[in-house]
Image 1 (tube, rainbow, N blue to C red):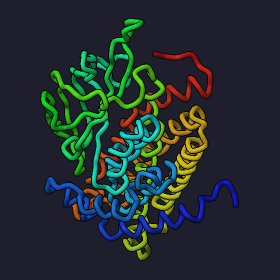
Image 2: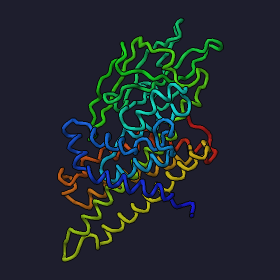
Image 3: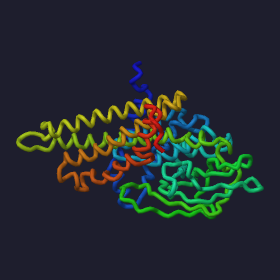
Image 4: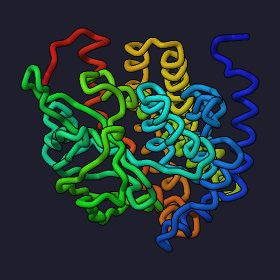
Length: 387
């Protein structure tokens, strides 16, 4: 089998997920977002069918696959017009981190719910004054005499907190031996005393909401710590390669969705006696976008394969490149699809204008295009670090 061909199992997985996505579609997604509802029905069915848990180890109820399988699910749902943002967060970041660093008891407690879709967890790292500089995180965890932890601090632009039972929180604690601040990860219940959230009003059309979080003497048990106290940056970044791979997959799915809508319209809309798709001013931009998307997909699949093979540095390089390529493709594809539709592209009934902000967001989050380019410049090209 060619190394550029996905396995038969993954291709079958894509077909099955595409069928599920078509059952719901963009109309369901947009109506849910406009009415302030969640995509609960789709999430629940995807969980029951095992799609959300494809990368969770089999012993905890998952499919035992790798991040490439989960990314395929994410991409196909986005291609169907149903991009599920919390797939990037809950099974990918939190699930990967717990599976890699959690104790046996933690895995048994938190992974089965991820596998069948009955549990949703959020990831909390970004802070108002830290941005992409994780070294400046000030949310602090202090270890009490009884072994419990007390958290204080603020997080912002955290997705899906209103849907999650727990947050995987990145905090820093003072190492008793060295006195240095080190990162540590904690599973914090969203109903914990001292924890509050405030929704951020966004222009993005999405069922998932964004929040600013406040931790005021939030106490969690000793077993809320995921991983070792001294694991440092290694465990902090464990979920970030999967995050970038998943974000790239969602972006390529969005781009495929937009191109498909543009092509369908270009075939049926006629001017001067022929479909507008016969004109190169329409066809060439769409052809170029198709090429861009296929390149981004290949980079994403490469990143997933390297990650599954344990080549974390290679996966990081490919994941950052994929994130840039896919983010740009998504934003361009939605813009070109609107241009292809002309004035109809801005009419709600055609379903494209709703995706403008979310496709633009793909260049910003979960890591900005500029920070991803910094990584490539430094590690791929050997250029001096700029920050």
